[in-house]
Image (cartoon, rainbow, N blue to C red; front, side):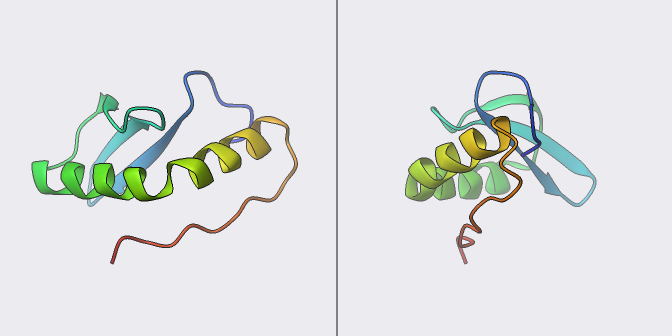
Length: 74
């Protein structure tokens, strides 16, 4: 996530040389691509942490400067 980033609420995921942007609301890929397995893992992680992701997105848009660390899936 980046401060003052564009809508819709999203985050970026990187795996090796691949990068994708995911919607926080749906967990779907908005732009870019990752291997199928990694997309499934990211979607599962979004389901578990959607509320925390939205909190962090809101904090960064307000330029609060800090955000909460979110546990990884594994």
